[in-house]
Length: 584
Image 1 (cartoon, helix red, strand yellow):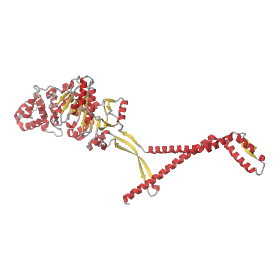
Image 2: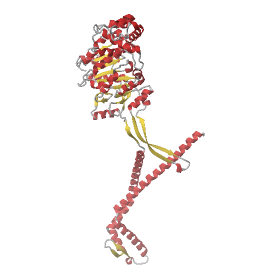
Image 3: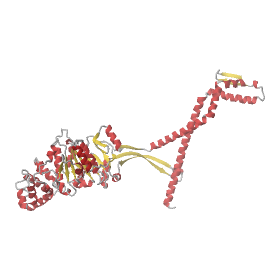
Image 4: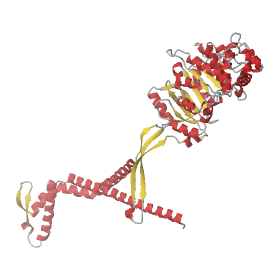
């Protein structure tokens, strides 16, 4: 036996012997309690069966019987008497021994003694055993409860975790259940405008969750702007009779031009910023000035709205023609024939940024702001880009989202605005939307409901920076966290779900060659723990997520059902709508 195995053997044998001794002491305590209860019970029953006076006369009767047994050999029985103190007459009396016995057995004292003997012979042992068993059982239950209560593990403060079914009941009892729900779990009432964040790696259930959300939005006749970067939502939910589609590479797209949504001077700059790759941290001269030049270029052609001329001027004109076009404008100081290298750098940067504008068709009349302001509309706006179109159309998508956000923020905050949903399935797949952080912070009173999905935090940090990314994520009050493969995202998600401060009992065993050293030490320790470990998030099955709702509600774990919304189902729904058998 090597040293390690010897240590294991010693440790195991010492601990076993210690536990065996402790168990023996506990068993002895249980036995003593059971025996004590049974003795106490027998004494009480004896007191019930016989009075002390009867016992007094019974002792005298035993003495008389002994006196008769001995005296009959020496005297005549009639001559044998007994002197005793009468409790009845409260004086000493002298009676013949046989008369005393006759009076004792024919009186109540003899009857009581007879009952006592019958009890001792027939019932005392059985009752004693029953009381002993009851005492043992009660002792075991009591000591077990004491041991359990001694080991404390209680929450002091922090978040709570409950089953999704219990959380749903909690919301309904408090009358705070929203009409929007997922797998039977409703959102907190009126928290739709506090925005929803869906985190999870690819294939975990983010899109499936949106497939459950969109029919509910349609059912409640809310409007929605859906940024569909895969085409899946368009195939399932697009209704060509009422919905609008924006994608210049699609045949059934609405025809849009930048000037259709430029009603004020600031609008030109807002649209131009959407086509800019300027980052304040890098302070790129050409990127910053390209944004200003595009704003002026849009103003140049605002009257005839000629997209072809705009593209030709910015991309295809030579340096001198480019500089000449911006003569007598606000950017003439940086675009001029005397600074051709600067002009060429700005033109090159700008030409790369507005490539997507080449796909816009002349004469387009669709306006996002006008569609937005039409309160009678119940249609949805689908902004689409297939994966092979995404890189090309990202600036356009960013511009359209910015225009929609600005239209949202132009609503009257004092009116009862209907919900306007912004569905951004893969938020990091889009170019930076500069107006999005402000919209998340302030759109609640305008009816804005943002639903965004992301795979990991690094994607968003690369676009918006760490500080702005953290600020944006904080503004999503309802969070659905599916499986993630990134440790940093898993850890930050776990912190988002919350922590608990608990107090728990730690039990330490000590042992030695002398039994005097054997003992158990118990002490209470306060510690803080994460409610859900990052590894639990990283190992979630598909369609399962942790949920943190808006407000002071516990977190939960939710398993969703696969939404089989195939094309046949969608067209069947449209047919029923056409026959007026269903309504939105």
